[in-house]
Image 1 (cartoon, rainbow, N blue to C red):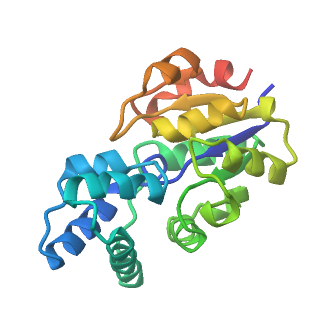
Image 2: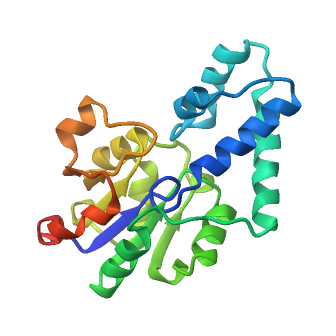
Length: 219
């Protein structure tokens, strides 16, 4: 029986991906470059090292991807400091509050920075529902490695088989599946690959659509 629900954050709970895309585009413009959405989509949900490979393939092998990341993250910080909007994805608030009311323990497993995760959750009034938050600073290997999910389960005091996961990216979904957790993908920018289609418990177009399956999801 499912006793814990673990959520990804960016793209799953919050529609932050376009914020990051705008910041990457601004950074690229400042450097005299063009950062197309196709490049951004390729970099979503993977480690900075893997994303750097895609950027160097696009811009050239001598591109300073660390400088691109640093300036982009600074722009995101500026957006946050200005009190920029961090919109929920459809059904996200309702899903968090629903599972909390059912008495399940909630966790967050994000490849983002803790300062941003805590800000997003606090700004949108849902941080109090989460018993465990694990971010990129706490793991050695990012998604698709299962480490972030296993650490979150450990914080919850949970057996992996008692955890239900919601993810939007192929890398994150793969990580949760490899962790031995019941995994549902809600794809946004990237669609599920064959491994996820074969091993995911459910694939949804939106978190709004999960409620008709609640009994099956939690069984």
